[in-house]
Image 1: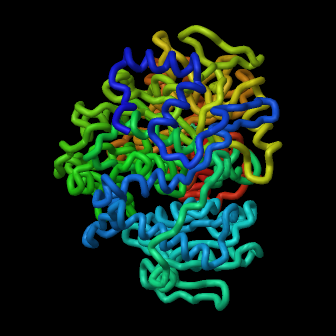
Image 2: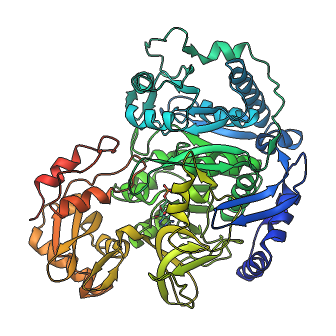
Image 3: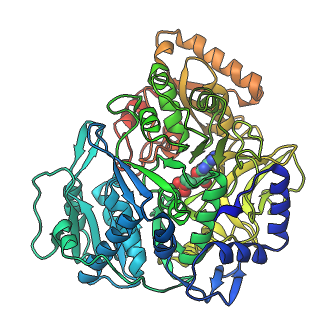
Length: 636
Ligand code: PRX
């Protein structure tokens, strides 16, 4: 796979033009050269935006685990595939070679079969970030079972909803998990959740924390004894290109979570291709993505993308703050990490701490830094650039979604000059469009609108499990012949894209369209501010006005609040214009966040609008207790 790197901006433009002039031949060439197929496709792409239906590499036969494991054994059998770094730094890291990964995945696949799992069955995986999580994912793929990984921070109710939605026959879990100085009773959560699920026949339990748990007779089994008796060889199930590979749930702006369905061949080609290019992965690199495999970032850029490239991928069980705030940087030094991929929320949290936590470690192995999941504000971008990258590592601000399966808009290191807060240019094959409210495409530069994608790409989700109509309504009905992302974006004078946030977060003030993300960027530049969230609330004269929730740094806490409010509004005035000034500013010690670190603006909007009668389910929040504090201090 050595020759599909893009190396210069000119080359990028050449490749990009070629990729959009004839997408079929572009992807066909990549699929042909870099992957292992049992049978070639009959047709590269067929699609219909109205149905909607998208098929890539139809007729091809393959197994993704042969591409991620078997084909590397001859040349890279003894290379580390997964480098497991445990929660406790005193516990030794584990290097799992490609040979070992092959044996472990085959054994696990044989165990799944012995428990009655067949091609097409759904298996729910509810595990902490331990090697068994990646092994279980790959074992499902080995035998054609559809994995549905549920992030192990979700509650029993959230777990049960997801298990029932896709009728999972099995749950793979552990006796518990380590998280910083705490342990979490995962098996207890599963037991509670399964009271509401009739579809689950078997529960396999990994022993991780050695806690005293109960196994339910006939349903639950320890995994290890089954593995001990399993053979280390398992023929891969030969899959059709469009057979489902996995389901992954993502929350909609309303209603139940959406089980996004990803299929085999297109997802494999796209996640591998983007991994290689966006991170400029080279054979001896050690790549680390700090996400959890419970999210799409972990699926595509801890497991499938890296392994398809024969890479070494780090899996970290713990948290950035344990045993102290230097933990990430200690791991970078220890394993000589070359590519580091994390979320802006982590960067902001670590940027609030003393620099000594960073300065203690040698970070000179780093070559590329990445961010994902939300817009990165300028201050955090610069902190990352200066203190982690030492101004020597390109930063890739990667925009994409659970639904897109892979990175869509991102700089390519050493090719695309990065600008803070810009995801920059579409990757080859990706054709973004900005749309206005009337459904017309806005052409040219220095414009903003709703971000759509106007041509299919290989890793797009094919449906919502059990609800194709919702798939159509959510993504293909707002604009004809377009995939609607739900995000707003602007295109600057050179064609760079900046994601301005979910369009449901755009607030129209006195007829002006204001993205909340740029206002937050401005506020976060204030030296006393750690983090902020802006929402709109109804206003008699302006239609909407802006309400700001602001978390102060320790240094800001002793300051006079009225003065701070003035300074913050002055900053906004300076950066964006007086129209974007906040009518109300509430200082708070925290913001309600999802388990993946996203601010729950829906709740903040309701509180700011004095509409707290129906806040919805707050139990799956990372910090449900903060909701009351925010309500108690609301500015009326
Ligand atoms: O609003 C965008 C934001 O995260 C949303 C997708 O969330 P999720 O499906 O959970 O996937 C996150 C990991 C891929 C998008 O609609 N988002 C993601 N990346 C960025 C971003 N917003 C701005 N900049 C990004 N780089």
